[in-house]
Image (cartoon, rainbow, N blue to C red; front, side, top):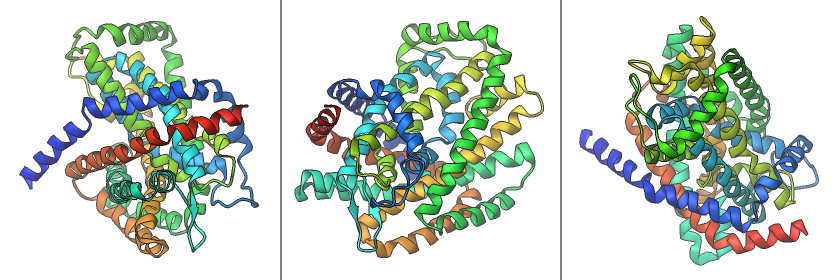
Length: 447
């Protein structure tokens, strides 16, 4: 088992190496220029359409309102990466890593827009009446049957990945975070999660969308408000923090205290890697949620879908980054990394409640990720096995939750990372080959 674990780690480092980063960023840049910076210029329209789309259009096929579809997609992306991933990026790559996370999100908006538009255009309705879409469908229906094998690969990787990064790792994060901060034993956490997840997931996509539509805004606002309070308490440091972020993005960071120092390349690598892990632009996952929206306006739904990286990375990850940098703890002797660093930064400004707040938010973020990935994974299994796979999948998915909470998951994390990368490859190929269709739809809509 140890040899297999080492092999997976080597593969993980390879598939998430410079080639993958360049492929994801390159696709995002290509789409950004091809769309004539549409995601940036239509940002306000995206928020307007999201607010307008809070109710379902009963005259159109779909299972979620546009607002619920976005919240379900955000449920999967706003997670542990927003708390632990940002801290790791700053600890390893320095403040400049935050700048490169912003850049990843800006080009990722074009990728999410493309995924959403194509998922809407090429979606299908199953014999049981489920509205399904995503990379496997726009590869099969957009590129023709000769490319169907590529869509099948995506669905296979996504279907398996849901049990790793979508379930076991998230439930483990919850069970790991709560005992230290609020004294809830892992066994109790596992039992409570099992019940809550079962109640939501066994109710189907509509219930997942309804819960996500309430939970995601609530948990995001709580976290942002607490972050703003901490930043406001250190408001005199904020100008210097921004100056450091922009300076170190192009010059690297000097070693200080327990911080080992970083180069520009390391800041770039960590910023891009954690940005992609956080907002999932290029993986094609969110497209499966957006395809269920009750709308026939592909481009308008694309405006809604592209908000994912903006909210996840530009807003929430920035809050985490500024809190950590204002605290100065990332350069302290024996500095922490990951979630403990974020918790320490909040605790330094809000003694007695800061670390508890981070743990509770981490638990809510991880819980919502389980809900979002359930939608993604079940769509993959419907593609592979048909409607008959839906109910058995949901039962198995729910049963895996407490298992993940009670076992060690280092190997599961690594396998999930590899599968995530393997999901990205078919999706990016599909986006690039279908980009002429995307550009034509977008320009006709603009006219």
